[in-house]
Image 1 (cartoon, helix red, strand yellow):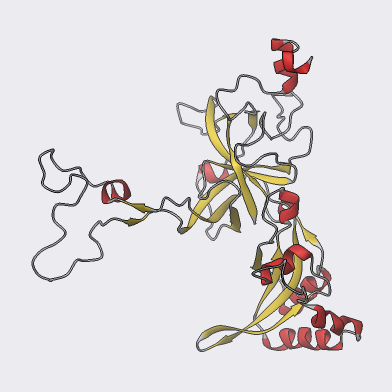
Image 2 (image 1 turned 60 degrees about the horizontal axis):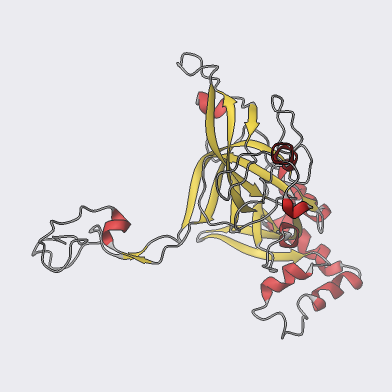
Length: 341
């Protein structure tokens, strides 16, 4: 899981033999998603039944951070903050119950998933509740999966250990909400002639006499945006740490600069933790949580298998028409400003 920071653009050489653009520079838009390391705090075992998967039991770690506990409260300030205190006593009494539950998962379950939460405090957002999700473990036997989950309790899992550069991934997010919208903007229907009675931005005919009801396929006004969407086949261009002094440097542009543009990303700020740079745009508003998923398909297209070498990453100000890539470059051109005297 990560948090959408904003967008910028990059320059690279296209590797597409046979194309007129082969070995020529192209400019592409990219999205930066800040993804601090997630912490594993539990494991869930699922049993296959005639009605589908059913959870058998859940085992939690001994210690949970405050930001993870906040997710279980509606009002943390007024609560007694007693969540998981009795559960932690199982470890103090020798963890026999915990071991027994793990053995049950090994014996009966066919699907094993770990429970992990984000470290939202590292993302410098106002929100304090961590986002918690289940992540399925694939590969190896059930015993190996359970042992791996037990070993990684209360340990961090970085985005670089899951994904790699040039990999195709899927993005799951909630789109930007636009509230109640009219049919013309929502569905792109044609505006009616000027002299139309009682409105132009409408649908002239919403169906036949019979069936005597409006069908679901007819364009109507209503909610636009704030829908959960899955976008597939997003290519990773870079995985790095935002605080690294050379996170925005390439082999061709040796200027020492970070990925954060001058003045920060609008409505987000600075990117200091691990980040993923993907090609193009993705769903969601700034600061919104985004789920990154391994691609479910086998990729054979040249564009999916292409090795990407970035030549330039733009770090000019995104608040207006930025001219300078670094503060040093701006100072060299503008000289000492009056506010700095």
